[in-house]
Length: 146
Image (cartoon, rainbow, N blue to C red):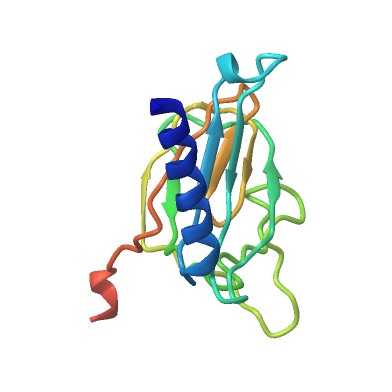
């Protein structure tokens, strides 16, 4: 009886999800114990009304001089989320197209001496060792804009 009730509840939720329009992103994560080969899988659907920056870049591992600083940029979810002509996030990554100028940093923070390679998009994705970070899609408020 309990199993039949659970199956009906699950199908009811699936049907409800299909019938009720929603605007919201979905994050899925499969840990190494949940995959047959031990891989970590992560995904993020984006319901950004077609204006979200969908570019995915591989940022190479880098070494940085002692006492260097890392710029912190605003994070709009629209295209282009970042424009950099200096190649600091990888050759060709975030290169400007005609009419675009470099994104102005909000400030900077201390840079670590070495960083791992990573894949990044509008939302952080995963580094070369499979370390992944999640996030909420609640944007921050930049007091600079007021």
